[in-house]
Image 1: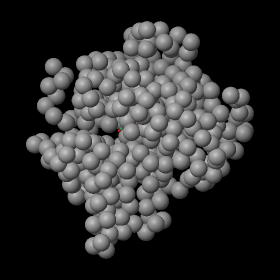
Image 2 (image 1 turned 90 degrees about the vertical axis):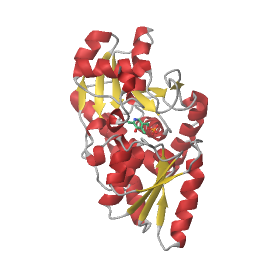
Image 3 (image 1 turned 90 degrees about the horizontal axis):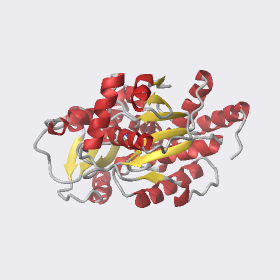
Length: 343
Ligand SMILES: *Cc1c(COP(=O)(O)O)cnc(C)c1O
């Protein structure tokens, strides 16, 4: 891949920004800082942190980036109700509930499984934001998908104008919000003289990775993506990411086809399952807290950092001199449950 000149990058960036509708919810750019104390402790390349956890809107996190674009789309379509869903501790659902309030809309949240015994973490916030919560009473995560459609249809029948956001916010519109993140960080890197070899991030339903993949491709940046899956097997998720990136490119008017082989995903750090804290994740959270004073979350960033730490130990990053870890947020989940996993 040839490197684009900065001037060419700036012109493509301006063109893309202009084509992506957005309601400003967060304040950007989020800060990009070097984590020297962490690096001193673990070795490996210089490590920087992109602080998307500091997006303050609705307790923040990277989901706000996708929602800015989806909200603009929903408003343009005259919607008055956002319908989405995921697991009970979903950052995406919590941020969607806040976005709905901001825009004067209703929000219906669909969760898989049964209503929980405890009202804590993200779920507590989502309820406080006034979202209507529905439960599929089925532990299959995919049960959320049909529920979203059925509930939206029911509400439409009652005169509402619903806008459906797929489980976890993984859709082409949302992906565009993460393309904007790439543009934002590239500008920041140019200013700070930070030339990363790789970007490290957590991979859930794939929208974030798809946006980074597409953004990097459009700007022809020499950044490798090191993504750690926290929910599905790499193969399954590679397909989803390639599909989302292709669809998002199409929305921007680019005929780019991404294939599964374009999407490198690392497995091995899911632990006992999505949303269940892992020992390695706990150790990674502890390490960052006690070196940099920064909190990671047990579902996403803790597991991605665990993957990175393992990679450093195995010398997998020996050819890199600088990496940027995207801290995608998610701290409210840290305050869910009794914290027994920290003992
Ligand atoms: C959702 C989420 C991710 C991963 O994003 P996907 O687009 O679902 O892959 C990473 N970190 C946090 C904190 C999240 O909430």
